[in-house]
Image 1: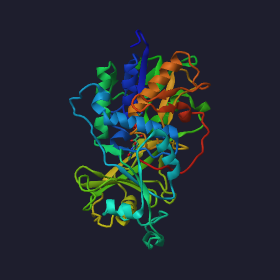
Image 2: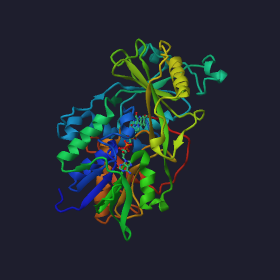
Image 3: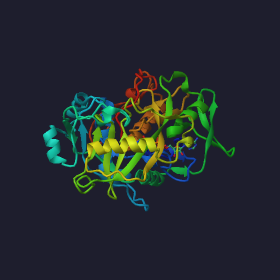
Length: 434
Ligand SMILES: Cc1cc2nc3c(=O)[nH]c(=O)nc-3n(C[C@H](O)[C@H](O)[C@H](O)COP(=O)(O)OP(=O)(O)OC[C@H]3O[C@@H](n4cnc5c(N)ncnc54)[C@H](O)[C@@H]3O)c2cc1C
């Protein structure tokens, strides 16, 4: 605890903002988390598939996920406080990653070897033996249902690899609540139903926030953790001058179907990444499977200017293509006539890599652009941001000499330069998800 530290405002009480608030409070800052919602996790966090896995294209993202997973595994210890609302649970299902065009397995596995992350490579026969409900046929490349190729005979078989330590978190909004509760115990306070409409500056430094009711809140440091709304906050702060990437909100639909025999949570099911036919899916409590998209080039991305404008229910198009893609992979699946699932948005950068950084406005930081895959990382992102804020506010030149944060559980080093606003950005359509 550092005595007399000035105040920090965190905008957003999603899984990221709650984690940032917790760790900043632990580092001794006087923290207030401000959210326009009525409680923690009301943004994209509540819709998250909450999958925890480690296959990424880059070492820093792999390391971030691996260290964060150790925290999900020791959730009560990580929180250090018992939330009366109950505890989110990490369920270790493992993840089967099938071969497919949209990912580079060799690269992912090199990172696994480097970091000591367990995995096992499987042939198609071994996949069939271990997961009899799943057909490892080569069906891709993914296409729309109306394309003749959708129903074509398989062109071969797929191998893959299993990462046994993967899984999911049962209730993502509750996980945010757990972090918020722990942050409160560590001294942070929360302002609910408080909409930020302005960022206050004093010369070249942030000095606080203006709320929609006209109230102003003063602070030495502000962290933008506003999720899909992050770009509007950056615009208020006027900090985009040296960002090499934008953040934009993209609509996301995740459908839910009854699990076929042999693929339920306690019945042989596992998490699956299927880059061949462009879905990810996992068994869910209550006998269902939730199915998200790998964003193949044939599926248009739906960007929204205002995240509040996302459609309120699963569309017929998404329901059809995703349920039928899953039915080809899990032949025992019965597709129900009633659509079910969640729709939300998340904020993506041009290269689908998050932004964990300072900005050109002194004291204004960003933990944004989580691009559909940072729920899992959140328990460690808080510490990355608290370490960054400590360093920069103590005079460290992060842009010239980027901060590296070591994971206390796994000993991995995460280089924050990888998440810099000034990184070289290679734009692409999408990224493997969940
Ligand atoms: C459908 C879907 C599936 C996903 N699946 C996975 C997965 O399997 N695994 C994984 O790791 N990740 C997954 N993700 C991504 C993950 O959920 C997000 O990366 C994460 O939840 C982002 O959290 P956040 O705190 O940044 O944003 P949010 O949860 O959106 O929180 C932002 C908060 O900021 C508040 N806010 C915004 N603007 C203002 C303002 N002006 N004033 C006050 N408050 C404001 C909002 O009310 C909101 O509560 C998924 C996301 C979606 C949508």
